Image: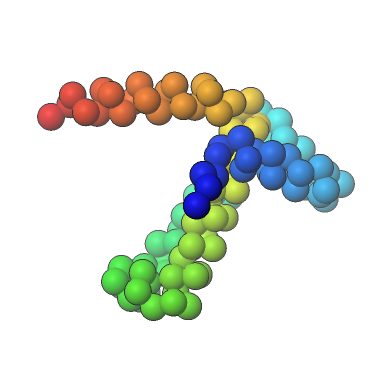
Length: 108
């Protein structure tokens, strides 16, 4: 199984943004807050699946699991739009993630 990198996701989002540039809000820092709100909406859809069906059923039942994974993909798509809006690159995110991870490992 190959890895699916942030760079690949960002590239795919750029392709989507280019295809729908006449229909969608352009990728700018101003649009970042809108993308965050859309992402929160998608997170709500993930929560609804779990809330309505229970965590075990949402993970174990094939059709619900597929729905859950699809909604999580929507969350990631908006997340990547946010990264694009604010010009955050994979390496920058990686360094911040590692730094936060190391702090959390020492926290308790």
